[in-house]
Image 1: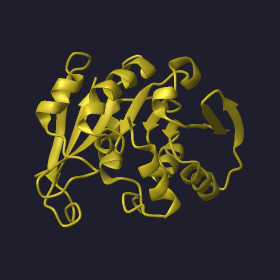
Image 2 (image 1 turned 135 degrees about the horizontal axis):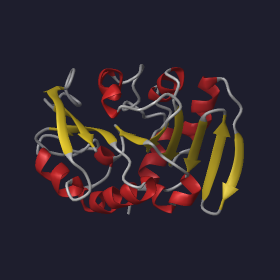
Image 3 (image 1 turned 60 degrees about the vertical axis):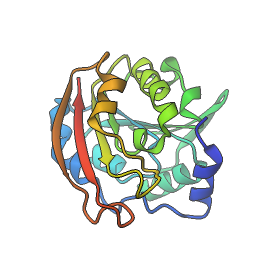
Image 4 (image 1 turned 135 degrees about the vertical axis):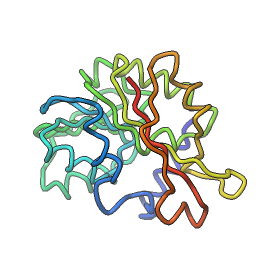
Length: 210
């Protein structure tokens, strides 16, 4: 199971070092590789209150997200300056405003009909947050949710003996194991992570899945 308590506690205690203070540099540089038209709907799994969301909205895209923490999503909409319309859908709550729908709850309780059409996926924080035994289920669920929509995927790669994660280390072999039966994979770039991860040297790998 995904450790829901762990992530809820991180948000309750505001232990959110993973939250970036600006739009992710790889999103800004490589998003155009998805070749999306303006108005396309982009899905961000385990999105938190990422500033990637206002960046995408400002670029003219619609955003859908999934997130466990209501605290994170309340902060997201407050920072967007928008009051969301909230509806309860069985185990999931939907927070909606113009061009944005965030589904709050366990992502495995989210279904394709509830999520609605998705044109692309941007995964910076989800795959790397999940323990190894959950990743195959997650990869399959994501493909089912989105009808195999193309993905921009960002992974970290480092010596897992030096740091336990999350974010976890996910190398190219595992990315191929998880996705190559559904997608054609292209490694767009690989570079040293700025400042490393908690003092541990790490690479960031940017993948395009189509």
